[in-house]
Image (cartoon, rainbow, N blue to C red; front, side, top):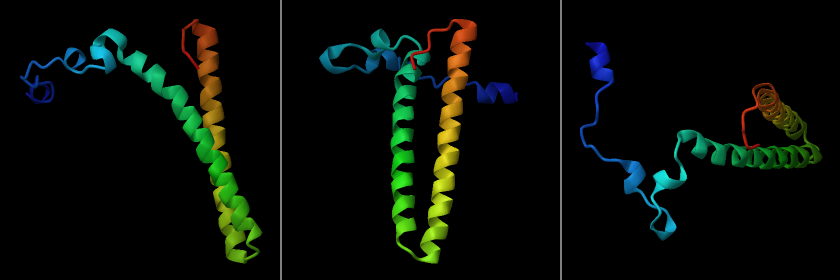
Length: 110
């Protein structure tokens, strides 16, 4: 009974892939045939946004460190530490994907 409640069809019968169109009237389903196509478009851009965020955090930490107050220096160290941790996570994620590409031969565009 629980499974029947969770797996109900919306009942509208609306196919968003053919309903939504891009510029020029091309249906979305003709360009993005699988969810993986859309994910492959988004992930590289997320790495770029993450890199910009790390850069901005490093600049902010530097300005707070230069402010010569003890509170500013403490805040800058926390910001810098968080930026380094974020960069490390992004770096490891990138290389994990590269190893998966090498081992499986998958075509992952990064």
